[in-house]
Length: 172
Figure 1 (tube, rainbow, N blue to C red):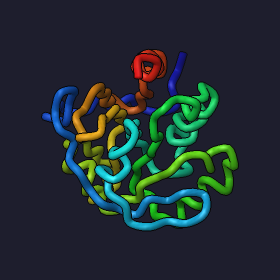
Figure 2: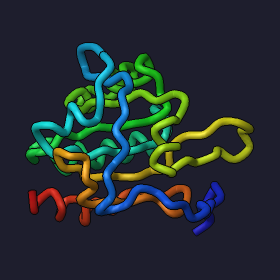
Figure 3: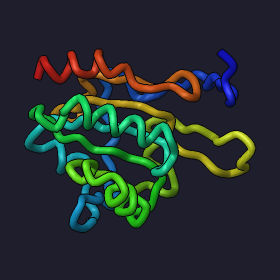
């Protein structure tokens, strides 16, 4: 099979891993009605959080990741599903408007990619000097931001191991 794109292997990093305490942050959190600044620790206070780092909204991988999450009905689990990308709050609102079924999710906006830098999961986009976004990554966090489970992409494109994540969600 001839791929119409290059597979890019990411350099190894010392990214946040299972057993670590996830860095807390405050960013605009967008839902289907509005957005406001919120911290990760506020979200995790009552329920576990599944934090999904994804490429910018509108990019095929971002759409595919959230379609898979939707189709697997992860919103039925007792976990807060939250995305994070470099997309602005306006782009997140458009993403949710274009994909009505994504309105059940919330998305952190991090245009400067500072959170990915804290998690050490930066993806410098090839051919776009100075432009970066987070690598695809998924973190299951408990109420004190301990990482219960983690996955970080090792190449581009790469997609989360949905069955493994679902197994972790089943154990909640």
